[in-house]
Image (cartoon, rainbow, N blue to C red; front, side):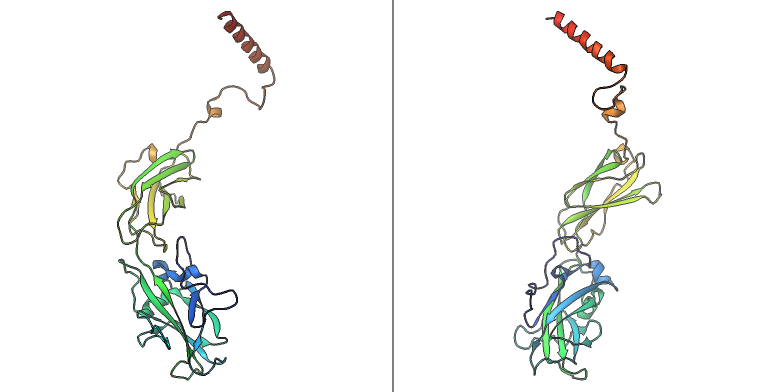
Length: 295
């Protein structure tokens, strides 16, 4: 799962040689937050790792695991099995160890928990349970592990005050940080596309409110859009841009005349060779003589 910025762990990471019984973590731990794209994905996965707490008998291979998700939390103590409203996430699978890992499709968690991928006011908690059944035909589980995922589908507000300045094959793009909204911007994504429809595009990311975009074609006009990006990786709903602004040089990369573009002399590194060198020295000597006479 893609992670751009500032995500929280599901639970405390497992110890190097083991994991607390009854706990679930994600691998890596920063994959514990699901953004909009992951909430809607039918192919992206998150890896869960757990060690079950056995309540009845002792663990043995040959049984099955079932992963469930719920909006409501399991009991805080005792046998922490998920409540009846929980639904399975994917199919059951063979239990080969009390500590085990399994991938699950990220887009299956919200429907199983009865949550929405379009919530905009606050992050939502998905309670995840792993139940172990000593036999595939058992009606009740004999062991459990619990954890949580954070479903964060909030979009930050869009940047404002977009501006740009030309450089040689580049544009310096700047904007004002947005304020308000239900979640702050943790970074920004800048998109430039050639206005002539040639399909030439550039995309860069930034954490500050300005960035230089290189690799552009001089003499080409670009349409610029900037998106705020939340810590969970959600783009702002509406990108800021220069729509309606009359195209001018501030939106067009321009050639920059350097010293050597303007210099009309001869330069080969160090002192010039050939006939120009002696003449230059004679000219310098004459100038020094004039300056002496003026003292």
